[in-house]
Image (cartoon, rainbow, N blue to C red):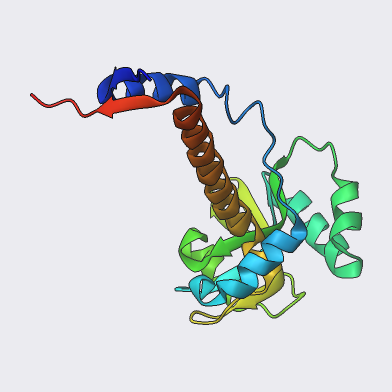
Length: 192
């Protein structure tokens, strides 16, 4: 039985090109269930211990002070969705995010951090001017202290990314093993 003789550097180049073009992973959907995410979280809870305070917040940036005050008043009277619907297509709205996770170091500038760190759950900040003609309003959804383990919904995106990388790596390893088995190459390490 003859074996195919392939230099290791050629194998690496071929596999790299193949993977880079996403012909392998793109062809096969790597499935991930909520059960997988929950199990990973339960098995690795300690890995998610927070190194810093974390805030789960709704935040909006508006270019007009008057519109920011109007938004805040509506928010205090009702809820985020109703307040947001009043300014849905307003060009004064620079950005808005709901249920966004921010680590303490990500909340900038310091004036905004001061406002956020003093909020209780469901409390709304004052209008904070973060830059000239840029006014922020923040609603605290939840806060988690450093050295605590946050609930799954806070770290779900991180877990999904980890699991995806693990499953992709396992898939590629199995695929390469299958290629080696099917084609029976002899891999010779290249040395200078």
